[in-house]
Image (cartoon, rainbow over all chains, first blue to last red; front, side):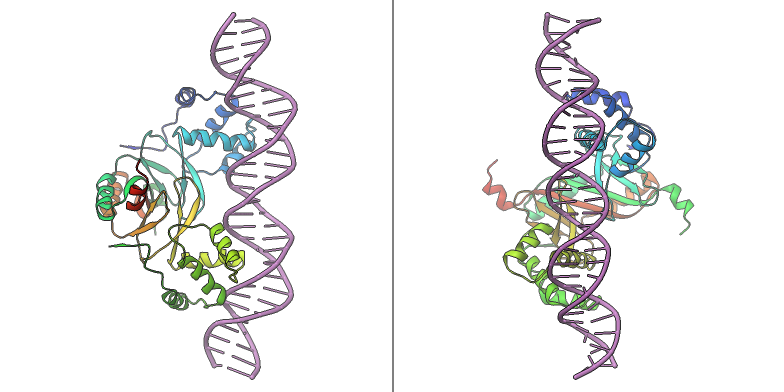
Length: 152
Length: 152
DNA sequence: GCGGCTGTCGAGACTGAGTCTCAGTTACCT
DNA sequence: AGGTAACTGAGACTCAGTCTCGACAGCCGC
């Protein structure tokens, strides 16, 4: 049910996913996927651009943005908004509807499936008359590691 | 428990809130609060800037941004991220922890208190070992009005 | 294996939300 | 009423994200 942030967005799977969705597997895309795979936790576009430059990976800024957009579209990556207002991305190790629990210290993230939100949304629909078709839930806290590392 | 988006952020209450928090009540701030009060549903900074210009309200762009920041700090307004990635603000008719349910068509918003998230977060803590100290939950759907207005 | 069609790429210009600066103004305390 | 610190407006600035366009390279059919 939960997936550790370590096991992976296998680049090969992704190639298949992109292919199936009608996208070409190019060097630049492979490179960006590689950069993302080597990241732990959340990251933003500036991180990737810096990584690409540092590792002399062939991927221009615009391409990184474009690839991220595609990866988000196929659900390999998700855009999220940190509590501080910045927004960043996380790898999704899970496909389909899920949520993210992000460590506010080390940024490491865990995917969470099925949290019983349907009960809550049904209740809200009943109370308000709205028909709910989408929700965004993000959880933030300290991961076990950071808890021991940072004795509050 | 739910609060209709119609009854208000009374400007006077707000003056009190700002005062208590050590902020001065200036013409510009009163003006911005007025603009927000006359808005229904979510809005973004561009909306307010346009309103201010149209209504010849004395509030410069920078001041609108600054005031919005303060109002968010005192909880009179909340910044949220629409499903389309844009981000905007909503008036909070409720103080303290609550969530927003936003109509994806007319943008009208309803405040929701206590949705039983503690059960969920406790469960997640148990499963993951994280200590959760914050979450963001936003619900999107069609309000009763728009449901009848837009026979799908 | 080889064109050719088309999707993609890189580089850099562009856009626009949000921030910052600074000199002038104003709310509020005494 | 006067002093002071908070606030304001105007406009310069920043920087994430988008767009453009000529060059390039996957991938399909032959």
